Image (cartoon, rainbow, N blue to C red):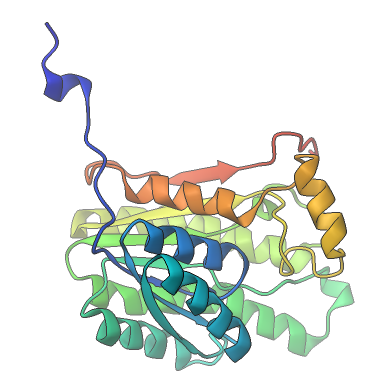
Length: 252
């Protein structure tokens, strides 16, 4: 007879977990915040828009507990300020989800100012939020980085974004090896096309809904479920990289 402990691993609960989420006011970040709050986690989010923050917190508080602040993670002091504000509100941090990003195009299509802003938000902002999170997490916790399939599907219209996300992919793997022995798990989630104003800012909402219905695009909630899966693995296990693509996606 198989011993029960050999056949079954209990799924850790998220109840009471203290979670900070960058870019938690819209899109994927908002979906993650709402789902984790509904599972009993306490969440602290940030975004650039006060209106988006208020809307997200209204929904979060319908299902659980949360708060947040507005700031721009491209500003050098913002990543640390966000982590410290989350730590103060939550009384500590168990999980840091680093998600905030802005869209970027081909290098020849962007101004120097826009390129620098994209790098400051999508790359430097990620690393510095991770850096600040290390002290907040202590000797146990999780850091989840939200990357993109753009790191694999390299196209001429996403030169800057693909370059940044390719850098995040390499950083995530090395960072996992660095932090694992220190008790912190590091995971990377790479979504395919997801209906959001960030990924497809010029695509009308109805077109996005059509692609979701056709299953050539994901919903933000699909990515949130992936993050939930990562966080409910036994501590000995790390989901190093989770790629989530639409069922009918067929690009190279």
